[in-house]
Length: 286
Image (cartoon, rainbow, N blue to C red):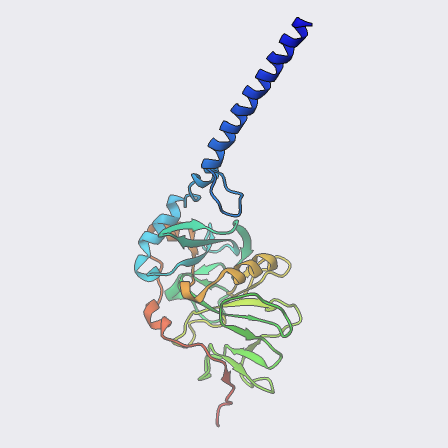
C-alpha cells in the first residue's frame, strides 16, 4: 500500500515538473513570434530577402543613370545576339534593396535576335536592346485584367501604324476602317495581343528605327518580329504586379552586352514626358 502511494506521488511530481517545463518553453517561443497573421516565427523573421546575384547588381550599376528611381524592372536576356530564345526575370526594390520577384521564365524575342539600339531597323526581325519605360497595358474587349497601369482595350478598331512614311508612324490609332498604310491589327485571331504591355521604344518616331514593340502572349513557342513573347500566365502575373508609381522599366540585351557596358538607349527623362494616348487615324492627304 505504502509502495503504491509512493509511486503515485512520484508520478504526480513528474507530471507537474513536465507541465511546468512545457509552459516555460511555450512562453519562450511565444516571446519570439512575429505577429504577422500569426504565421511567421523568429526563424522566418530573421531570414534575409533573397540576395540578388552580382551580375544583376552590375547591370544596375552600369545603367544607373537610365534606371534612376525606378522600383520595378523586367529583364529580358539571351546568350547570343542572334538567338530568338530569351529568359524573362522580374525585380523590385524593397526597402532600398533590389530583390527578385517571380521565378525566371522562358520566352522568345525577334526571329533575328537582338539589335543594338542604334542599329535597330523597321522590318529587320530584331528586338531592340536598351532600357525603356513600360505601359500602357492592353487587352481584348471583355477580358478581365487586374492592373494598376493605364489600360487600353485592343478592339477590332485599334491599329498600330508601322508605315515609315506615315506621320503616325509608331502610334496606336483608332479607326472604323483599316488604315490605308501598313499597320498591325491589335485584335487578332491568334490572340497574341489578348494581353500585352507596350514598350516605350522610338517614342520620337524616328523614321525606320522600328515600331510596335510590346510584351505579348507567347503563342506556340513562336518567335516574334521584334516583340517579347511571354507565356500567358506569367504575363498576367507581371501585368498585375506593375505599378506606374514605381516607374517600371524593361531592360533588354545579351548576357555579355549587359555585363560589359551601359545599354544604349534614349534619355529616359524625355520619354517620361510623353503621354500615351490613342489617336484617331488620319489618312494622308494627296
